[in-house]
Every structure is written in structure tokens, then in C-alpha cells.
Image (cartoon, rainbow, N blue to C red; front, side):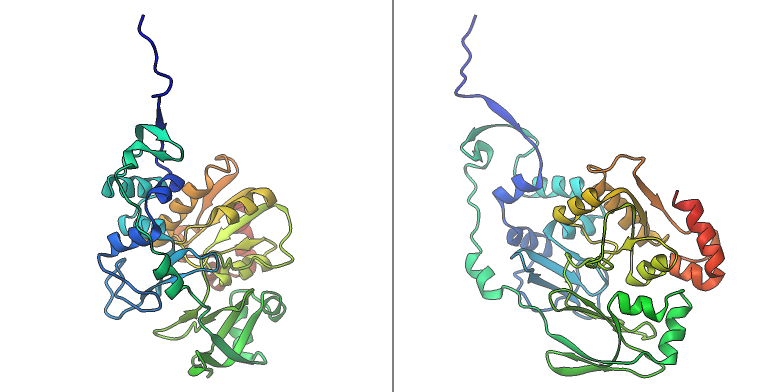
Length: 346
């Protein structure tokens, strides 16, 4: 019988986010898939859609992680970029990166300390100087608040959202908005301006009646809409797609939160916080193609934490001709909205 060499045992090396980041940096991944040398705080044509004006930028968040932000609402890490470019889930995105960089994960290899032999010949690039030079500071957004006008009250009431709820969720009517101390927006009855205020000087500006430039924000992927200090443990949570939907659901008696976009990848810390506080999660995104893809991606992120009985994807029925719950309320009213939610959220 031959002898076993216990000093030369190979281990299966799975394709994981941690393993990939031990081998290559987020900067390398962004550089590869963007196809050019980028700089932070500079806008480029979006690689995720047809873009006639530069609306895509990169920045370092408060944890020092390189992220992207597209003005269509998509934002996140290098992994989110790959997922959105190829329209795949999280694990499929990891497989693409593993393949394109020839990392060799998903196979057997010898381990030497924390390094596998399949990576021994590959030198990880150092972006420390780049990172320190361009490390993000919050883009300064300031606004002058004003009392809610009758037009403001009327606009929000069509979705069942009262003035008290606007105040509770830190929503303001803004007379003027300043970007880096320059006036960029002002309120008028034909184009009202609302500011959503979040912790750490994060602000999201919303102009619902504007034909373009509806949004302006300095939020990050960690800025969760509706997640406030009075956010307590309950049995159920709805993850929806907008602050408007969050407040509409609140008026109906449901606790809800929303990421900054339907394509956003939630951090593990946020998901773990939800897992500790809520026994069941409902995903209520738009019923269009973008919403369907976003809901599928979010479901794949949450499925390691929740079983199928406690993680449920629901949508507003297509035959209602409404894509989200707030639009449904505006068309059918409070009673029908409550009936729909009672059927969907069990």
C-alpha cells in the first residue's frame, strides 16, 4: 500500500467574494469591465445602458470601498457592476469574474498559509496611492426648507401620504437646492422639489414632475430609505423600491424599507440586521422588467438567510395597469389597496 503525503493535500477552493478579493482588487475589476482607466469624481458614459450624456461615476464610500453610481438609480460594488452588465445573479457574477481573470477558483489547489498555489504566480496590484488620492468626501448638497404648500399636500395625499408621515420620514419641501454651494434647483408649483434627509449628511432630492434631472443625491448603497431610529423588531418587513412606496405602505400599517435602486446589492451587514429583526421578508418591486430582474437579484441575496416560506416575492397585478403600490393607491384608493395587501401579505 502506498503512503499518503499529508504535507501535500489539495483543498477545494470555492468561488467566493472573499477569495476573489484576496486575489484581485475592486479597482482591477472595475478597470477590466469598464475598459478604461477611470478617476473618481468624474462622470463617464454609462456602460449599463445607452447614455448620451456622462452620468456614471465612481467613489469611495465611508468604509473605503470603491463603488459606482449611475444616475438611473443603479449603484453598488464592482460585483454589482458585473451583475448588472451581464444581467445575472450574485454567484453567476462571481463565476464571470473568476473566468475572465483566470483565477482558478472552483477547483482543487494546495494552500500555503492564506495563499493557494493557483494564485502563486499572480501579483495583486496595489492601488493604495490611487485610493488615498481619490478617497471620497460627501458631495455637499444643501437646501432651504419651506412649509409644505397646498400643492405639496395634494401631491402626496394622492398616494395616501399625510403631512405627519412626511415629517416622520424626514421629507422636506425645498425652496432652493444647492450643489457644492451653487444654486441648481428651485421650487415652483409646476415643478415642486422634495428633499429626503438621511443620517451622515446624506440627502436625496426628488422632483416628481420634472421631465429630466428628477433626482440628485449623495447617498450610498448603505443608505436604506425608511430605516429610521424607531425601526424596531417585528415579524414582517416589506422591501420595496422607493420612499414613496415606503410611506404609502406605512399609511396602510406595514413596515417597509427601500434600497436606493432596484439593482442595488445589499451589504451583508444590512442583510444580517434584517435577519435578526424580521422573521419574514416580502419583496415588492415594480412589475416591469427592471423590477422583475431587481427582485430576482434581491431574492438571491436573501435566500441564504431565509427559507422559501419566509422570503416571498409579490407584485401588483399587471391587469391593474399599475406598476407599484403607490400608483395602485392613486388609481384605486385606500380600501382597494388594503384589500390587495391583505391578499398578498399573509
